[in-house]
Length: 275
Image (cartoon, rainbow, N blue to C red; front, side, top):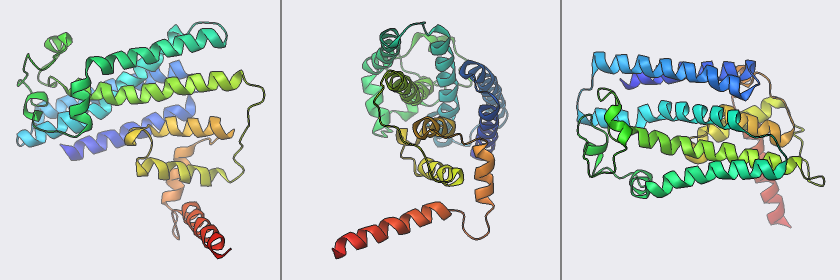
């Protein structure tokens, strides 16, 4: 199951990256990605129905760790689409109020699910047999009403909540970016930083940060990271995924920039120690 899942996710990420390069409009991109995610989940469900799980441990792992990753992307892109669709016309004050209201909604979900947040964030497992095994729901464990209307052959009582937690992390970053961009647009004396290195070097750095899992606890989407760096450093990275594939195919060194950056930092530290 995990092998099939990994192939599914790899193909999905590739298609999302391709769409992100082709489509600039955020709402249109969200619509197209949502279609991909719905199909991916449908294919995954079909595979689960066909192959099942070898034991309860594998089932728990799937519904706790694997399915929520894809489902969280669906929740996130759907939220972005709705946020963009409902965004009011107006100046800084109007937009700030709108984005802050959306952030408040995220906090409300957290406030209503503090216990489960704590359980999930601390990587607890003593209730996994209740939370992430189909049909083992417990009415006492803060069930959402919609759970009773879901397809229980492909859902557990809390796999959606895990996906919602992951999605909310990404939605929060998106909203904070909008607030930040809104503030930058309205500041005239703001310091501007421009990337003056090669685009290949920046793409290498971005993929390195993504691989290290240091952004949003490793849940940041590569497209979101790229767009953030493009805005922050006033650079257009173009078909970054194609560039990444070229990095992978390098024969001598795949991490030329990261290696040189490490050497430059060590050299600077050594020189400072000698003073």
